[in-house]
Length: 454
Image 1 (cartoon, rainbow, N blue to C red):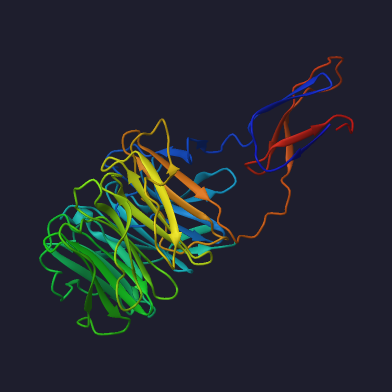
Image 2 (image 1 turned 90 degrees about the vertical axis):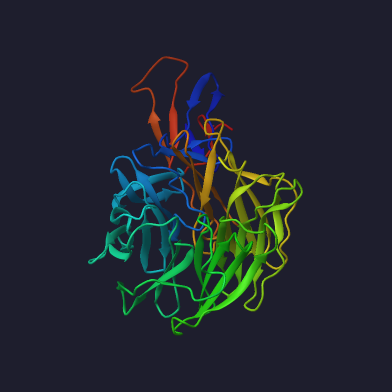
């Protein structure tokens, strides 16, 4: 008998001339599939809450053919670097510790050579200081190593959410809100030298509510800082040309109008210097826009396009850019604000428009009914990288993720290998035999023949 795996593995029973073959799922270490996506592992530990938050931050990155994550390890009682096995859709803990403080929020940036992770707690105490962690990657061994001299302190004390970006001059930027103002800090000369933080010197950046947040993005030879101002009911965007003096900021307005701002925002940029922002309003009418998307073309912002209405009740949006296929993916949890299901909509980068309704479920589980805080990567995605998003359920304390293939990837023409995992030993006169197979690739099915028969 021979077994030939193809692409989509299920538990099946085949009757071949009186011989019953029980074929179980291959790769029992595979992540548990749920209604949509995969249920990963638990993060229940003291101080750990919503480890895939905050809204402007990124927990994932793509490097050397794999997706990676800054995720909490109960074994290490710390945030570690994880690698996603795309065949089994399981996260493997590399054991490399990022930060052992359980209550921090993390923002990960891969620049093509090094991994940067900014971490900070939320209190003003020194135990929650904002830190920069830097790691070098060895492609020969698929390992990350913490660089000498790290972590370094970025800012004393904690904040709601700290976000990092790197400009074309190699300068790292960090933004956060504190004392009703938008603050930035940057490096000078090296990644270990951070200048004193300063409040952005612009109108609208110094009269925030305690709920407002900020984020930062590198685009077209510039640094952009977006923040919410719920006193002005605006989402502002400040621009700083790479290499310009620290005082040289200009301000644009991405979204404005009565109750048109909230502290939920996620911002990404494409290679052409265009910026895309998914933000939340504070409107209350059922048909009013709740999540909107705007685009900055380098000069001005487009009118906000509705992703979801107040009646749809989305929350905590996140977006991804696929320039290869000219698509924009937007994700959000629903309902607000405890979460439930992660929904997705996509639209053309060149003509942003969303269908009405909740969207397509992206992560959904009957076991985990309050899935929230979808997080992805700062990078653009394409047919080679595919698309991965991760979220968490703070009631069950489990991570969940999903992965999508995107058009334009390199076809997999290498057939998987088959392994017989159990079978009768020696000769037998029995007319039945139970034989189990496993495949080297998840998503395989088996076709079996007996003595060359069909």
